[in-house]
Length: 316
Image 1 (cartoon, rainbow, N blue to C red):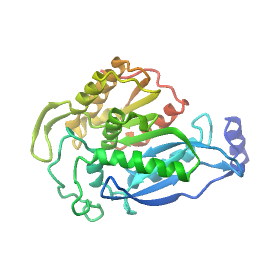
Image 2: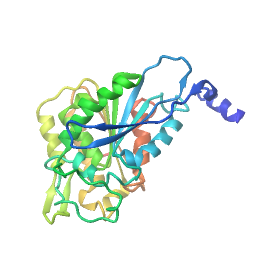
Image 3: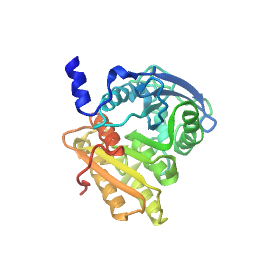
Image 4: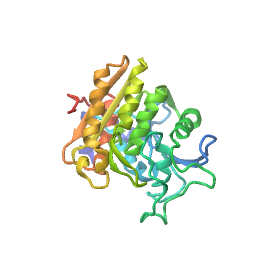
């Protein structure tokens, strides 16, 4: 144990004996923008007793599925300042203890035209634990409402209740949550200083679950082109994107061409040279749609706080 403390001290870390770790807090927030109650989990970093420090905030979607994983990764990253400074972690999920509670609601909250519509909720093996939209609520294309919940309700709530460094906010989203991150960057870029976009759906080729065939549909690339055409200027935003090399070939997601389309998006955004936007991208060799998830969070957080450098942008 003493050897570990010495190791942490040698690396420039904070002495664990001097830190107090607040309990995880959970809030149920009823939204005015979405006909939905959200489960919000908050991890605060270890703090010295009596210290009056303010912290940046990392907001992560798919909280039911990912919060426990990201909590553990965050504790480990914050053990040494070589890996990450302290930050507050906010998980955005739905009111259930099931990790799969949001498997269908996320489809509504992350999508925006022209994302391929799936033609309703098809039966899945998780129907007994998955929450469904409330009566009269949207079941698709709710990204604008969800974005407004985060921007107009959740962020002010977190800023009021916790010792945040106001304005220093990072977004993380995987898969559909990655597409939502780009949608937010292109529509209300000021909501976050940093965007970590993991394995997003950006293009589609083939027959979708609704039975409609799409031929080389570049829906998100077109969205990016429209954004670039407005000649935006951003106040110092980092965009970090990543995907696993094996995602290109996975049967469940192969129609999205996740790896190659991520590389194309990276090149498009890099070539645009938008003032005030720094673009970085990585392809993780040998990783799948699920195994890329924790790596994307770890690397993205480190890139955000400047403790990891992406030596080159990878694109085809």
